[in-house]
Image 1 (cartoon, rainbow, N blue to C red):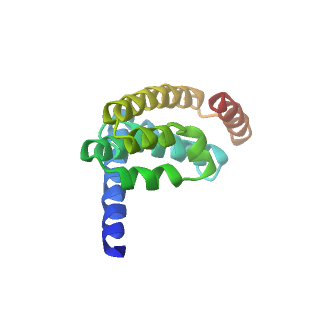
Image 2 (spheres, rainbow, N blue to C red):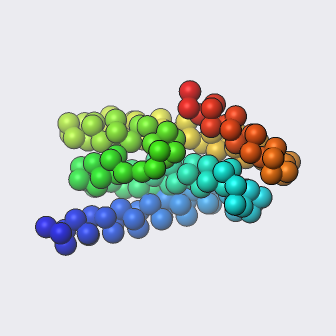
Length: 152
């Protein structure tokens, strides 16, 4: 049982990393530039968490992979895991798992696509906020405003 669980977790980790690669391509180098600009700040943590959420929900990412495989266990583990910021950025994770638990895979996929679209809008907003390479104090102010904006 432990070996099977480790296999599920390893496969999910690989799918997440593939999702990150897909998101890096979609970002066209802007992720790397943003992380370098905000290195060591709360803005960097926010950017990394948003990129992780997109790696899970975006096309070619973890959720798409798990939904295609009909993998309820890995979806349950992902819905239960995550930092407070990840849970705030991707609250749909639980609803996706609940749809999968009920065997409603089309709904799970629709929820994933909706989450991805919402996160893509947030990604563009974040890139726009830091396009002018603000000083750290201004970056911190913008990050606080962005986090309030995404918290709804």
